[in-house]
Amino acid sequence: MSAAVSVTGGAQAPLLQADGVSIQFGGLKALTDFSLTIRQGDLLGLIGPNGAGKSTAFNVLTGVYQPTRGDVHVGGQRVNGLKPHQINHLGLARTFQNIRLFRALTALDNVKVACRAQGALHPHVLGVGAKMKNALGNYRDWWRALLLTPGFQAEERELTRQAEHLLEVMGLSHRRDEEARNLPYGEQRRLEIARALGTKPKVLLLDEPAAGMNTREKADLMVLIRKLRDDFQLGVLVIEHDMKLVMGICEHITVLDHGETIARGAPAQVRSDRKVIEAYLGDSYLESHGGAA
Ligand SMILES: Nc1ncnc2c1ncn2[C@@H]1O[C@H](COP(=O)(O)OP(=O)(O)OP(=O)(O)O)[C@@H](O)[C@H]1O
Image (tube, rainbow, N blue to C red):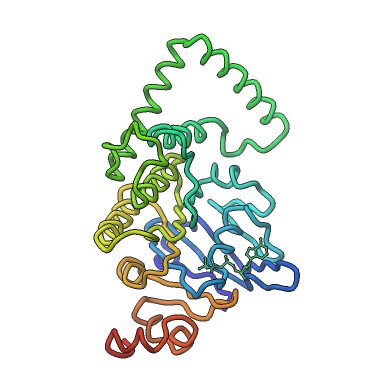
């Protein structure tokens, strides 16, 4: 199973492509020969039992881990060896399984930080000359901030406007000035998505976005994720244990078990796959859903 997969299948250039990616921790093969392609408009799911390698896949795609084998391309550029913030600048943003907000900052500032970070470094700034240019830019920005120049103030207003818009999109305007740590769990998860969107990604990776949410919040989130995909013209990859959510919104699902891709396809195809039932869904899932689809 190494051919890269995408739902839209070739109409547009891939935004994200993983080809035969493997990573090993000591003797443990956490991910083996993992391939995936995401194009604009794709809404893909990644599922599998605990320890299957889902978060590891996210970490390899986003540069947290370096693959032992295989290649990752973002926007056509090979990103093996790049740092997570560099890959983020190329258009890949993510949320985390364990929420990682700036807990003592307000909701607005959490998103503003992301909006500002996106403007701070040009996507292709990786060489020495460009790094120097960036350092000089930082020095100049420091003075502008200290002196509160009109240019700096205008930029601040624009960042605030962008961040407020994203809070509104995520239904969090009423939390604008509250510290992130005081938000209910479901809202913290949505704030993480707002922050990821602040970096203006082309691809959004959501690691268990519905974890800890109640049924109503999950239903709302399903609608919202689709809307984000459409309104922001994204490709989206979702890790989620809630089968109703994954099967409900994803058009294509990849199933991992012990780091191996054991199945992929449309939801109906995946949920009737014997290997998936054995490894993950279990017979109780089949019974409660009236047998294989
Ligand atoms: N940094 C690491 N060092 C050593 N082993 C690791 C590391 N990261 C992940 N693993 C191991 O790799 C395997 C896959 O872990 P991973 O977190 O990707 O699974 P997962 O599918 O996301 O599981 P869950 O649904 O529980 O979050 C596990 O056995 C895990 O213990």
